[in-house]
Image (cartoon, rainbow over all chains, first blue to last red):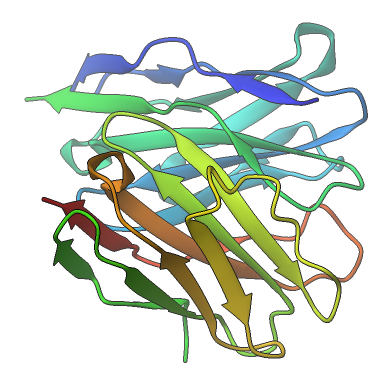
Length: 113
Length: 116
């Protein structure tokens, strides 16, 4: 069975600071990994995904994530936070050959001026 | 349409009543998913449809929950005899299914269900 752990239900940063949202996964077969963002009262929007090509994946809005097999991690980063980045972020895994996504519990990103 | 469409966007119902939630996937997407998001929690998988194959119902929490899909288009999630713990956002999603687990799953904006 696969699972996703997101460390920290809430992360607070100042505007302009580095954003780091942590995600660790477990999967018995090679995984595909995804980060989604959910703005208040909206659905989920795909930020980026890892599909076994480059281990460093660039997404929308300046976010990127690096797949580290040895650490079973897929942490999300952004060099400089913007107020508009305040949202909830979900990491998800979909093992190769599987059809459904398994989500982490989400991390709420708070950005202060 | 351009995206996954869900209706109603908001529904308040009395405990014990039945509710139906509708999902219209992206045209051409053969895979359709229902997830539930309760307040302060992550997304729980409910059910998955792929073409004419038997649906994967492994995530349905009880026999009060059921879902149907007409061909490769609209799906309806039905909750019978609603309970307060059913209050949640019900998210529908769809994707192309060409054999790759890397395909993106696109989500609708959800149906917010409140059981009073």
